Amino acid sequence: MNHYKKGQIMVKFLKSLFFIMAIIFTATVNGQTNGIQNLSKKQRAIVGIGSVTGKGDLTKLTTELNAGLDARLTINQIKEVLMHVYAYAGFPRSLRGLQTFMAVLEERKAKGMEDIMGPEATPIVDDGSKYDRGKAILEKLSGVEETGPKTGYAAFAPTIEVFLKEHLFADIFERDVLTYQERELLTVSVLCGVGGVEPMLRSHFNLCLHVGLQPEQLQEFIGVIGQAIGEKEAASAQIVLDEVLKSKK
Image 1: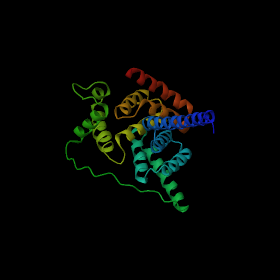
Image 2 (image 1 turned 180 degrees about the vertical axis):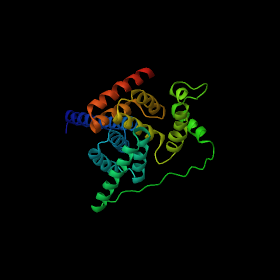
Image 3 (image 1 turned 135 degrees about the vertical axis):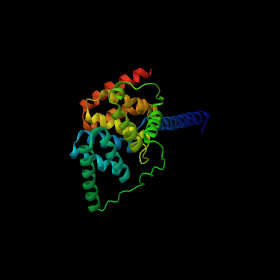
Image 4 (image 1 turned 90 degrees about the vertical axis):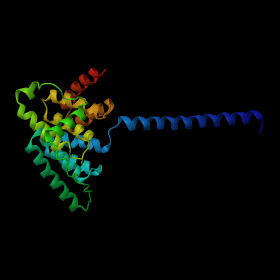
């Protein structure tokens, strides 16, 4: 083999090597990016279940519950999702969701499918004031310390502000079956399903960002909402999210 042919072979070899290295590098970078930007299958399932339950579409909820179990959400995690819904959409939506879930589990059991029960919530041993515990949790979620006189609805109807601190943030958010991040993602999902609550949605998008959800993940969340409950709801949520992200810049 002459030197010219050896040179051609070497050039082809180097080109192939560089091409393979480029693929590996791209895959690595994309993998790292996706690790930050993409919602997990479990997170997407929580969005689907929460939004459909908030909207009250029980037929679609059956599909979303099966998807959640297939994504390896535990039975107790899904129970917690459906119980959390009542704080934002009321007992009727939450109870019908739980009844639908019971039917889904029976159907899967009849088919020989085994789902993971998972741990229950750890008992709360803190005997401090529930109001103070709830206030501390809200401050952790928002990163803003509450000082000074009450304003807005808290000043207008102080009792409901107590309910929020003691029940929503102490009784519900304090339960550890779901993380704060999962609960905030769930909350914005339910609010999208309920509709017409843009001020609350804006507030909880801000909380989502503070507990570590990335703007790219919230953009993906909008897409999941569109698939789960409709493009109209997704478009409304997109307007609010755009406002929140613009304010952060």
